[in-house]
Image (cartoon, rainbow, N blue to C red; front, side, top):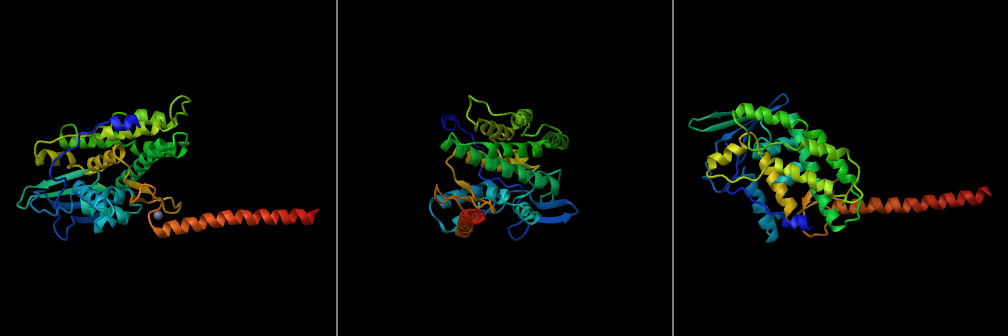
Length: 317
Ligand SMILES: [Zn+2]
């Protein structure tokens, strides 16, 4: 706990963080061509105060509203929307709203209008969602372990293995971006080997079980370091090839600050949601009812089976 509370963060500060601004209806323009998404929007000028495509401002506004109990607090935060996007339809809606997560190509037309177009590979998008979902689950697992240090960390370890198998292509992505930019990207995957070693290592008898989880989260977050920018142009350059650094900036906040995101305890749901109470276990009352019914039938089924076995034994004597 000391470790977490001692860490400080230097967040990136500028008034806005949009990849592009909407062309119509508060959304970017998106077309699907085979397994590629082509996304277009106006280069951000930040003149419109509503900023619907600004991921970090949206996250912060929802956080503020939730803490004040405002009515739109039912809406999910962008990092929860991305982590929960378990099909292409949801992933495409996310990209249409906020821009590419990892672009394999970006084209700029200086106009007027000043336009930005990116290509996002759908398979790459699915993998990035899976890494992010596993990383967010790992953050929650580590926080649970901090509250109960004797707890087993098997689930955390399986999440680390999922992260390893889906981040192996990050060095290729980095190289692709370096070639397109003609200089080094602001993110850098340097410690993937360490994560790989942790994924296959056994438990150390002297160290807390969740330490592996904390190391992996730190390495992921340090891949997308916190930076400060002197102007919007340089800030935009850091997210030109995708808004992934912003998603990891949110993950950093979720890791360093009190728990604000939960994962549904309903084993058939497992969705992320914004916590309204610290002890909230389910994303909705429906999920709570379904899980409790299942638990009840499982428990009473066990009792009924035991009674049947008992009866059988008595008759067979
Ligand atoms: Zn649920």
